[in-house]
Image (cartoon, rainbow, N blue to C red; front, side, top):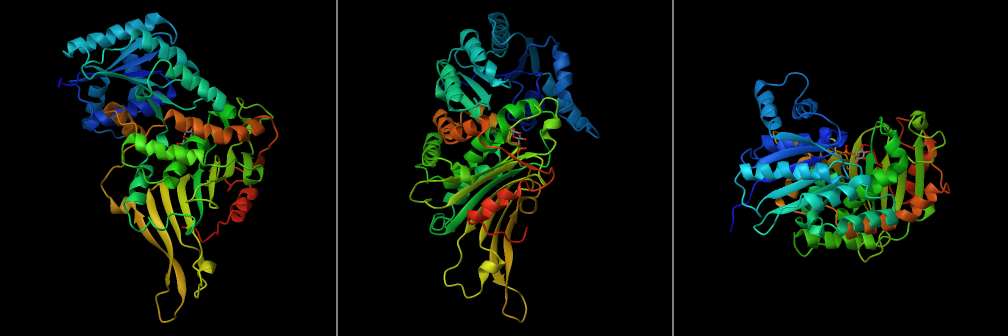
Length: 485
Ligand code: BG6
């Protein structure tokens, strides 16, 4: 077996926001923890801007260390990391730049004595999807390596993958004509979050949950995403997409799949993704009466947002899964910008106790909450005897807060974990083409109705819970509000 050759990580769109804020910091963290060895790794930044290696390094530097109080050790590791980065300037649709890029990568491979056919090339497209097709074409024509000795070429892409079913399928076909599915890593960074990755373990390694996780015991499931800030300078992008495309169709649907899927045959990525696709394919068409849309007041003040924009910045959508396990259980997906808090959580609410002699429902139902962020935690709301001489009951919690239970353990950033997976060739936490298609199939009719102005968002105050109608829909769907935690 040949030794694995050297690794080139090519960040396309190197001077853009995503690269600076997410990609390079994640690479730096991997480097710091010893996952990227200077003896075998080199990083190439590629973009259209004419800058030097040092200019790129200086642009990135500020995102890698705390502005105040960086220790000399931190500064030193940043400097060493930055020395691994080289910049190549070129266009996204011309051969010249990509040929130059290929030459640089090959020189690096030769300098590391990498045997031809064993080198690894990871292309990270930190770019708008409109340029994915030309860029993929150029990579295919100019930058592929031989793979006969275990080497590979992989590409990493990130949403938005189109705006609806047709545009997404078109993009998938264009990329699919150039690369095989095992070479394509579609990032949904929610799949890199610690508590999202924990869902499979929780569900399938605990006897507690196995017999209860179904329509006989669960009344409703909520998957909630809230942000306490608005579009924050991204108004132009956001207005084209809206909250359903930005958050619900991808991040929240991926979470829903992991909550609702059947046990996979094994932990092989294909087995897991097969089960996720089945969930998506079992979702019934969305009914307008089970949708509430909102737009925060002041959203259109952003000069990049049209004055009469119909784009929702908030949505609650009830999904129904038509299968043996979930028939009749509403899955309530809620996402909003400019709300009263920043939080992402899953709330699984159980049915009332039959023949209840304690009036449990008055205090609140059993509820299992998984808080994805901030302050990762899982807790179970349950009814216990109020300590004391009287026989009365009270709602309490069994609480697993990660900050307390796992003190001293740093939870990795989603991007860090996902980039490492792309290097290792593990596609479990990436979206497969058929998953993407099935998720678009669910939302496209609703999105078209919104785009055509047939459905209007209700205004809500920034810093609020969103439109009151969303809470009414929640209640109608069976959710019983208990005291906050
Ligand atoms: C991105 C969306 O995918 O996720 C943003 O485009 C959103 O609008 C972000 O703010 C939220 O990510 P996180 O990890 O902060 O919850």
